[in-house]
Amino acid sequence: MTIDLHTHSNRSDGTDTPTELVENAKAAGLDVVAITDHDTTVGWDEAQEAADKVGIRLVRGLEVSTAIDHRSIHLLGYDIDPRDVPLVEELRRVLDGRNGRVPKIVAAFQRIGIDITEEEILAKSGDAGSTGRPHVADVLVDKGVVKDRGEAFDQYLQPGMPGYVGRYSVPTAQAIRLVKAAGGKTVLAHPWSRGSDKVLTPDRIAELVDFGLDGIEVDHPDHSDDQREGLRKIAAAHGLVVTGSSDYHGTGKTEDFRLGANTTSPEEFERLLG
Ligand code: AMP
Ligand code: ZN
Ligand code: FE
Ligand code: FE
Image (cartoon, rainbow, N blue to C red; front, side):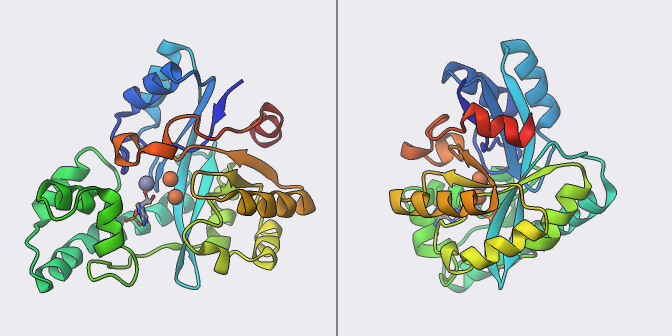
């Protein structure tokens, strides 16, 4: 059983349609794939139809933009009721924040003499329910300002860089409560990637367990072997489910992020979603 519990379609900042994502997952030899777009469930129905057709088990999920101390923390939610009103309302706030940020990003780039427009960014997000910095990165790539998304983040889009603009995120503990109340399961996505080990200390993770955290994504392309070992110990100490996944984004992120690059064991999958 090959299980990948974190992937993106073009309903957020991946490049595959939900159908292509599922077909590619099948072709990559996966038995189970989760669709986890940023702050939206709009890809679920199409993905489910494709999954039924090609014969693969689909897990319906999303990746919620949350924060602790102004640091971005991603929370995976699985098997929620997509009509749960408090959760949907909070996701609406995040999505409104994403849309409201677009003109501010354009202004930030104008200030440094780089000419991009709202229309160009929105053309990149296209069918997405959720516009993100990777779409801005794609515009910069098209214009020859940078060579790829990674360079766009390094030079312009990450915090501290001139094209960075913040947006609303849900306090992490509140996001856990909302997902749980919507009948879902919660897993911290890449808890120690990109410096988030500074905020997600072992004590902080213990607090989140009290709010209902179910698992942590230990095996993720951003984590070193040492980080994985440390996270595995924390998971064992709290009885948290250990997951592994690719965080596939289609051609938006390559190399280590291919489907099935990291996987979740059938035992842990059963504990989380069985
Ligand atoms: P946003 O939704 O605008 O907050 O952007 C989040 C997306 O940007 C996620 O898909 C991240 O994987 C991606 N991302 C964040 N930081 C970087 C980085 N330094 N390099 C490449 N992608 C990044
Ligand atoms: Zn993404
Ligand atoms: Fe993430
Ligand atoms: Fe992700």
